[in-house]
Length: 212
Image (cartoon, rainbow, N blue to C red):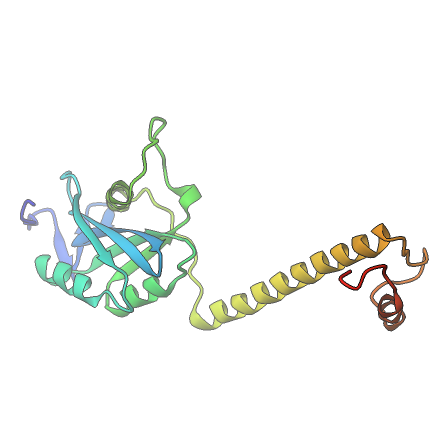
């Protein structure tokens, strides 16, 4: 990798960040491709330095409870400057975001649907995706999504759980109604279902075979 040497005439270092004419940039841009591998999460890392150099791959690491070792290594390489991490929103949630921000660096989470794609781009690998994220982060072509705080995320978990439960309840009711109707038991038209009277009626139904 080419050593990063900012030009004093063009770049002013402020709190680890690099100020370019009309643009704010960081000591390095780190693209993370996060996905689930059995129990662990594999992270493909790519770093793009400010400038026109192509990003380089840092390989893969296991996603442990913290990734402080990676952050410390990259921070030391770039003189302790502020790094910008970026990864796609996915099923792993925002835990990684909070870990990275807690180290004093910045992080952006982007929606996969809002990442620019080339017309001929078909082959996807973890390494390529990480390199692409680092490159697009450096060029400012990524649009981050809003990341909820811990309390807001907990409330979202609650509402999702309730929504899932109501969906399962609705499906179970539909299956039960179809089952009893298929065996010739019809609840009187116009009468409300899923009331105490309806449950009493369901419990009174008789079927030919015990296993029904």
